[in-house]
Structure formats: structure tokens, C-alpha cells
Length: 90
Length: 385
Image (tube, each protein chain N blue to C red):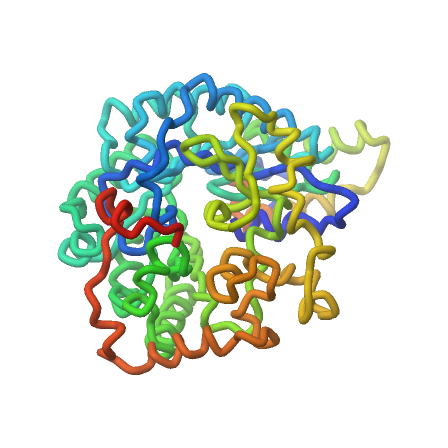
């Protein structure tokens, strides 16, 4: 499906995101594997809770990090995450 | 595991990263008798499995260092009556928990209890796509039971990896194996060509496929990928005997993997206990922190400082760390030698001789009877590999 600011992403059912102090990073865990997320990927993915849409995630990130114009980056990441099945879209 | 190794940057020797992957081999006991089992050939000599409390200590100490993926393996881990409480403790500590099982011993009651304990994923092994071959290769009647186990795993909502070890006797059934994986609705399929350790080394000539078989299997796997979409993720692990460069074994010695054997030895990989002249620490008497950072067993082959020629001056030494120490010992009789899979090894011919034999169907070595993994055979053979 086309990803828009109205899309509501949720971390995929076979994935788990958690903060790992030893790696100083968010990681995405799945059967016998792990992806270490960079800061922006971690901050986006942890907001993919199945309730917030992309617009709300962007707004939250822009407020939290006192930044602007993040929408294109967030949309691009959600698209990548969807391909990897890291998120499910509704 | 593939993605894990990609996700972790290569570390220099000065900075030792955490043991991200903890493999808990809960028991060497197993109802199956697979001819390629990687367990030590002399497993039957080991006694005194770790207690529940001792496993709790391992889980706690490794988690403190940063372990996050935890595999419960064996032998058959379902044979431990305390599997559910061990999984529950691992879950409580924040691990992602993986159960690696033959499916024997899984029933509604236990699979439900494991779900409640927080088990995240189940890897189910099959030996082949048909009842006849599955049961022949494992020397058991387990095919129908595995099919039922697969249904239970899905009904309880677990993601499932189907693992099938590939070798000369089942590699020509690759399409049927993929179909089986698809039928049971596996999310991931590991077509893991046999690696020649433990019992697989004993049966090596009978198990190594020909080049033609291997190329056909790879072609069919790629075709399946191209025509079936990405619903099921396929991993095809090539046998390193057909390579010219060695594998980056365990992603580097003491780099991310920590194996604990049923009797409490801490190893940098599941077969390292065969190596001579190297004392591996016991989790009953050492902490995981001491084991990982300070023990001789974990420091001996870390990084590149221990290397001899041709590895020490090789421009590729950081790519593969000289390959596998166990293979170097088994084939070159020196754990610090280059892995003979590498064509720069002066003993590479010891690999190509085996590969050459595998091209001639029905030669004398191949038709020797397979030796099944079992306690009686273990005591008779009485050797580490």
C-alpha cells in the first residue's frame, strides 16, 4: 500500500524493539537475529505503536528534537521498514 | 544469524564487544540419532548437567554483559523438565528467546506453558521432506510428529524457522523441502549444508554432495526466491568445502558468540571443546565476565595476533580471521594454522581430495554405512570428532 502521512505503522508482529545499554542503541530482535538501529531509525521505530500515524510521529520527532522538515525522511524510512517487514501498516 | 553478523561492526582487539549471542545447550540427550549432529562424538562421557539455578546464574551474568539473543539447544532441549522455568527467567531478564528443537516432546501443554513463559520463537528441524527419508536419517519415526509440532507452533502464534540440514542424501529433494516449509507456513527456512564437525566429520564422505548436486540445489533455491515472493525468507548455507576462502567462523573467535555446554563449559563456539591444550572455563567456578574478557580459552584466538603464515601477512585476514580453528585442528592438526578450506593453505589439497572423491558417485568411501549418533556409538568411538 502507498505510504502517506495518514498511514499508521506498527512494529511487525515477529519483531521486538528494545533499548540495549550495552550497545547504547535500540535493537530490533527477531528469530535468531538482531538489527542494531542507528539513532534516527530507533527513534522512529519506537514510535510505531499502531496508534500514531506518520503525521503524528513526524510532529512528535520534530518537537522532541527541535527540528523541522523530517517528513520525507520518516516516510522513506517507513517504506524501507515495510519492505523489511519491520513494520505492518494500517 | 546472517543479519546479526552484518549488523555488528568488526571490533579491534583492544575493544572486546559483548557476547551478544548466548547459546545454552541444555542437554546432550536426544531422542534422534542424526548422522551429522555437531555435538562432540564423545558426548556420552559428559556427566552432571547444570542445574536450574546454575542456568539462572549463566543467564543473569551474560545478560549483564549485554547478551540479548538466547538460543536453547542441545541435544533436545525439550528433555529438560525445567525448560519452561529457564525460558521464563530468560524472558524476565530481557532476552529474545529461541527454542531449537526436533519437535519431539512438544505437546499442547508444554507449548502453551512455553508461550506463557515468554518464548519468542521456535526453530523446528526436519531431516528431509518425506517420512521415509526423515525417519531414515534420524533413525526414528518422527516425521508425522514433526508435522503435528509445526501445526501446534503456528496455532500458538510463534514465528517459526524450519531448519533442514542438507547433504548428499537429501540435497536432490530441495524443491520438496521448500514445499514442505511453505506447507507448514514457516517464516524462515534454513537450508543449512552440513558443516563437517562432530558426527558429520565421522560420516563426511557419505554426506558431502557433488558439485553438480550443489549447483542444482542453489539454482532451485534461487528460482523459488524469484517466483514465490518474500513471504518465506530463505537462507542457503553453502558447504565451505566448496569455497576457496574460509568462513568467518562465529563472526570471529570470542567476538559475539558464547556457548555454554550441558555440563557447564563456556566455549567460543559449539565445537571448540575438541581443541587440545586449551582449558575452557566452567560456569560453576567462573563468572561470565571473567570467562568472556579474561580467560585464556576466549583470548587465545581473538583478533589476529595469534596468526601464523600464510594468515599473518594475508591482506584478507580481517575478513575471515583465518577461518575455523576446529577445522584447522581436524585437518591440519594445528588449531593456529590457516583453515585448510583456504586455497592459500599449504594443506588445501586435504580438502580438495575429499571434494574430488565426492564427484564420483558410489565410491568405496561413500558406500560405507552411516554411523548414527547415539550413546553406544559415542562410547565405542571414544574420540572428540
